[in-house]
Length: 206
Image (tube, rainbow, N blue to C red):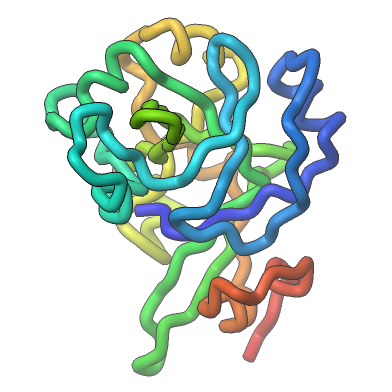
């Protein structure tokens, strides 16, 4: 799964990597949690959407509270996601994401960032419910390196596959290679979504 991530890259870096002419205003964030407004990249450019997908047929936007992630194995056929999978794909820029491992009876957070790159591009879906636009992050089985922390991870779309993903190509929902990620232990302050600073991604040993 993916329950928290960060996006703190300069807007120029985001624009360059995704080939964007313009971006909506967004602030650097180090602890993005479900229900937050996040940046998404679609075929028609960049936009802001609430994290937690609300299907277009939902009766209540509260449905999005449980749909911040979609499993790659079932996304094409699960009713909550299948329409968006066919017609409303997106990329979600991220500087990194967090995952937790139980150590000594406590949940210890780790920060996962791109190795040798500025940004991940998570495979995502977006939907419009009345005037509300929402999104979800697609996850898959973790690669060998990530499995030391957690059995799932976000699907990361390679830079050369951005257009293919957005245009509906199949076969892209797989784990990024283990040597494409760096993992470091970070402070438990990230456990509280109200905390949001660069200190959250600094390595720690305690």
